[in-house]
Image (cartoon, rainbow, N blue to C red; front, top):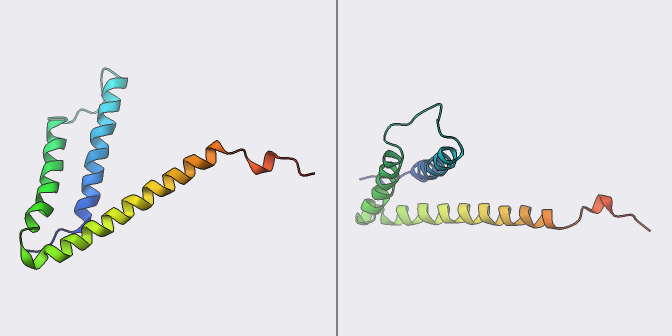
Length: 103
């Protein structure tokens, strides 16, 4: 059995973002122009299936180290994203230096 590809993690993020965006769109307008079959149950089932594949490969001794390395890389990427987002939101709170007069 081969270890899960990091692409599965990307698919998981896309699935979760689509679930969130669909929820926002459904609340904003009564009639969506494009309807999705079995929404949101199909999206939840897809997310569960994507999570189940790496969970099952954890029990295969040969692929466990590769799975843990993939999870570590994914964690680092998510932490970098969160740190960048926090830095960007922190910059909006500070006054712009171009507006400050130099004496």
